[in-house]
Image (cartoon, rainbow, N blue to C red; front, side):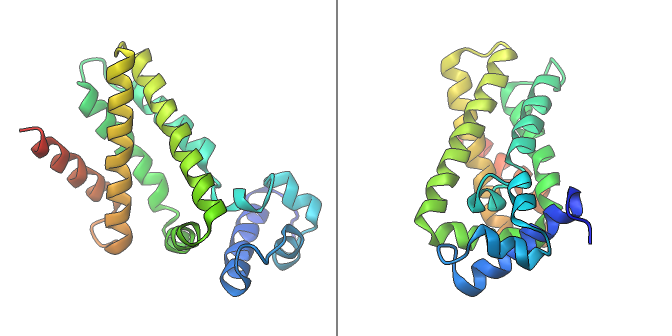
Length: 185
């Protein structure tokens, strides 16, 4: 059985979700996750700094994807449309993770230490979006407001999608941004 790479990372995530569901987050160790995944503890720590980070896998890629989508969006787009473009692209990556999103969200919501880590993730992503918007020439004040509003709209779309995955996350993102536009009229 391979002990590294994407396959091992996927097995670690699956093992963590199973163990967290069986025993709870606080009563599960990194060593137990590694054993369930068929790898040693060193391999676990090669992929994740601690057991919380298993649930936040993909955060760095999401941040880079959002920044890239914003910076590379066509120059004529208004900030609103840049955000829609970036968050719709981010939705595509999250849709691929659909099998684990519900379990992750429930676990995070029920575990104070994970809620705290989730808030940190949201702050880091919001800051990255704001910085990318500043790189496009938006003032600090508008970039901050746009980033916070865009992230909140995206989170609303994700919650909607969690409750009803049929339309797909990209459709939920587009609907949430359409609703936001209606609020400003």
